[in-house]
Length: 474
Image 1: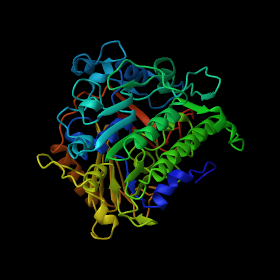
Image 2: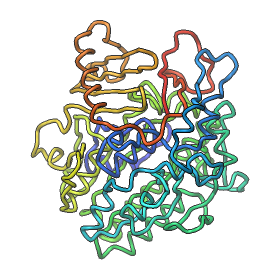
Image 3: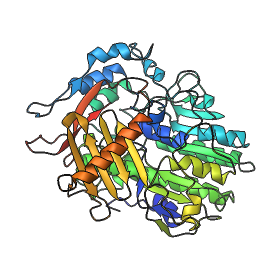
Image 4: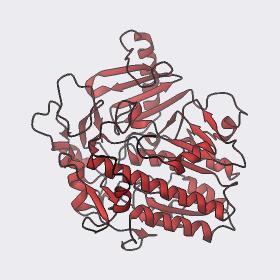
């Protein structure tokens, strides 16, 4: 809605349903993707943290700016608890940090129903045997198994870059990320052109190639994640944005919207748009570490925090044959619901041998079920835990021995902490978190770092005494 319109992305909600309280599975990318793929809270199977190389955790966990009041911690003593092979000094080591092969993905469910299944772009759920996309139900997987890739080579004449020198994450990415993709476990190779364009070219080809049979495409571009790299033509189209970094970020969003439009147009051209379920969402809120203060406005918090800025995600769904256009859905829903919704659309059952946390949203959107899809929703990243019970949201940051309680119905932007005036409510909701913890499992690998993430200011801005922050584990 700001300076950079996204008409194609917006059209998915306008032609279908806009879940105005759509939530990511987590405040960071990989656990959110695990929730999307399985319909389960990732804490049920130990995929609690975002896989990262030990060198990355060490850099982020030990790096601070002069004058920082709250410094991060790196837990070197926990390295010995890491899974075998995951601490080696090679780029493939991080692939050992994988979602368990025994988890059932939506791709496996749909493949069993005769769907042709395609993964394009980011995976980040591990690369060891059994956990790779082609082992988890995807007939075709083209993209990158790690958490990111370059969009173009840094010195490409068609690219405009923005670097955040204060940010250890950014300093790690530029020298270490390849401009490369793999297909079904092949050696890495160079894609053609700007990464988001390339993945979309392949999505368009896949739709055309599979137009006469049921197909499922998980289109997972790395836009608009760092490294911040825009195509020159998108950057040049936004001269009204004076801040260089914001302009690159906006240009990346403009490019993503253009590419979503190409996919929607292909469905239309092939006569498939009425009976294709299209879901658009994001794996977490905008990151504070890119140094842009307003990217999650009016919500507080950034990626890695469970304030709304970190977990409230765009969540649009269009299926003209089944969902009336212009629907707005008021109750909280989440990434965990995508699994059962897609299975339901395909006429497939969900697994009965394990707890599925999500529900099929279709009957709720159609008005056939007037109840809330979820009375209670949970998030956890190590010692940082959150429960949403109806319209009450409790955040517990155990490392700080601090809680926040918000009444989301009357205070959707989390300005007024009611924890002091509502001690009984706090107590009851902490008990809900404890019960959920008891139904969760130990993380597959330990958190190696704990660091502050500030709620009301982005990275690159000096910390001041009294600034609100959470301590985040990963």
